[in-house]
Length: 274
Image 1 (cartoon, one colour):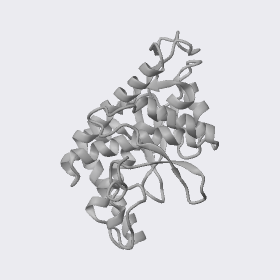
Image 2 (image 1 turned 180 degrees about the vertical axis):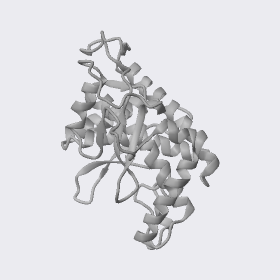
Image 3 (image 1 turned 45 degrees about the vertical axis):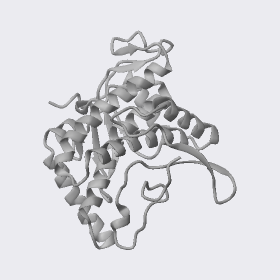
């Protein structure tokens, strides 16, 4: 059974946080409920019926053939792998960055919608009520809140909740994919590191981006197995001579095997470690 399709009314609860965060970013529609149409996919349903990943990859293959003339199996697997993991990673990163709250990120409490043009998630619904927060949080006394002592503990909660969801994905997707489990966990590492960075970068200032980088360093201060690395964010000199943040990917999207395409600048195939 799906969680409630109507917005929660607990003042100061997680739904209030989501509504505030939704107004501070433009990448993805954020919802606190599921609409009545059939465009939304509950993560728990997809993980329980992994054949849905085959249907997703078939839809993507049609789009890739229209755009590039080919749809290699590794590419469809790589795109779907990264796109799915973006859903729990981005939901968790946004709420940590803007609200210093962490949702449960259970598959039964997350849903997404695929875009009508390119089949990637362009909407995320966070359906659960429970969240983790700091003692200073104004909602810490709510029955849906679990208080942790400090930001390091909150970062550990985000990492643990995300790992639990990502582990479910790896178990469901690995048998239907040409990609190995290390590649899947590398993609899980990328999704979390990227999402923490993007949550700050979308603020549009160097200070906001730096805060996102700091969040990534807090959550991924070292390698936490089965993730494959600590945060790989680093400062480099850009083409205009200014220093800018970048990161080395741990996983490959396999875009380079598409006709006329080459490796991304941050692809682990060509980007040295360190």
